[in-house]
Image (cartoon, rainbow, N blue to C red; front, top):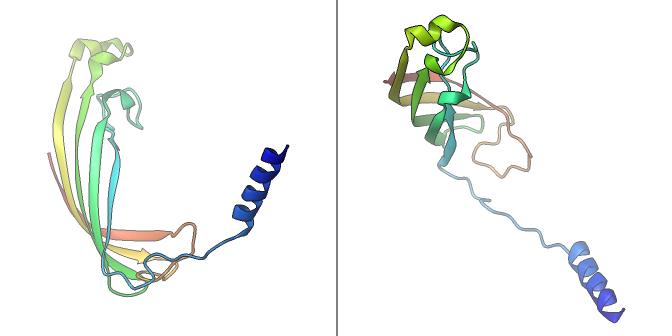
Length: 143
């Protein structure tokens, strides 16, 4: 019983005591990130107009952003992955198995973007759980 009381007391002390901490309180000069995911082909070689996960392969996206106001940042993206499709994997319609088209290709995308932070807290301490933003820009994709 004494052991349970000690554990409850320790948990209570830890739960009700707090020490505020802050990270990156200074204005930062760059943001960087890595995204992992997949690329989906949407075309006539898959059965669904929304694409198919049967030919999905891994993708990596690396980005860096430079805030220049509290609302706006420049952002550069590099995406590397691959796309593939094989219509012989699908039973219907039967003519797709007869035609039997398939492809697989590497894909690289470079893009430059203007990022608008809706909260206006680029480079400042943020206490928002989510920070929505809008992106607009141009890019080039190499197959």
